[in-house]
Amino acid sequence: MFSIDVIVEGLGKWCDVILVFAVAFCFYLPNIWISTIVLLTLLAIRAFYSYNEWYKRPKNRLLYKIGDSDVALVTGGSHGLGLELVKQLLVQGVSRVYVIDVSAPEVDDPRVFYYSCDVGQEADLKRTIATIIRTLTDENKNISILINNAGVRNNGALLHISDKKIHDIFNINTFSQIWILRAVLSHHIDNILPKNPSKRLSVVSLSSVLGSLAPKNLSVYSATKAAIYSIHESLIQEVSHLPQIRILLVAPGQLTTTMFSDVKPSKAFLAPLVDHSDLARRIVDKIDTGDTGVVAYPFYANFLPAIRVLPMSIQQMCRWFSEMDEKVGDDKS
Ligand SMILES: *[C@@H]1O[C@H](CO)[C@@H](O)[C@H](O)[C@H]1NC(C)=O
Ligand SMILES: *[C@@H]1O[C@H](CO)[C@@H](O)[C@H](O)[C@H]1NC(C)=O
Image (cartoon, rainbow, N blue to C red):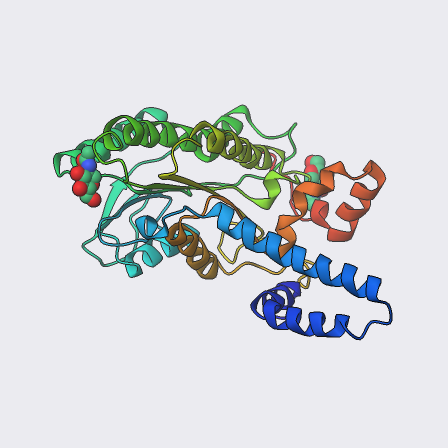
């Protein structure tokens, strides 16, 4: 489908060719000062872009390449984006993938180990994580890729959702990520790094564009995703002295999974649906290069956090234009 993302991706791919033409064009500008200013601006933008790419990457990329020494843990890995992530990791040759979910993944691969667990049940979840870490330690292996992906959605006006539903969704979408992060990161820092200082740990947390702009009747879901943003930002600083730990936040727009399949997308040119297997491939690529930072797709998702700083009347106009507040019904349960 044709969208602004197709254009942006094309520009990205050809950016150096376009730059050469733009530089050549500068010599035809009528005034030497204008030429110089345009030329320097273009080169400065290009140089900054490269610097930023370099900045997000580890200084020794070979240490971070996905391979057969990697063991991954994926929550919610039995369907949708989680299942695609599991498949992509297997394609990249990881030695094992642990899947935590309420139903088993439909993949036929001896490298997949399934643990049945509702991540919203704190005690069960903590027990399952401890079991996985213990099993791995006994075999002298360790988790090197952690993907906190499990999540559920619920609709409803804040005043109509039941207390139980609010607790449930926070437990699944937010608290589960916190418990897993704490268990896996502290095990890695206290037990793995002292013996094996170059052992990497890639952490991926699934948030959503709705974490930076909440639609009507989706307040609680959006809040669970906004919390993931904050944890990501602060955690990067908390472990910044450990370059072995790579932290990625994923903030996708509407995916082609079933979770939001009842929501009819609008403005497909600006906000195309994100193909979830394509997104899984991009995430696994970022794990492979060892990037730290935010992966936001599609293109518009990179700018959503900026809407909040606009004047209220303009924010309201953006919301009206996107029709975002007319999409989600009120389940009244
Ligand atoms: C972590 O796993 C690697 C194999 O990938 C192993 O060489 C190393 O000893 C393990 N470290 C610990 C502390 O178990
Ligand atoms: C959102 O909830 C309100 C309050 O219950 C309801 O009146 C409205 O119709 C809902 N929005 C949509 C798009 O269904």
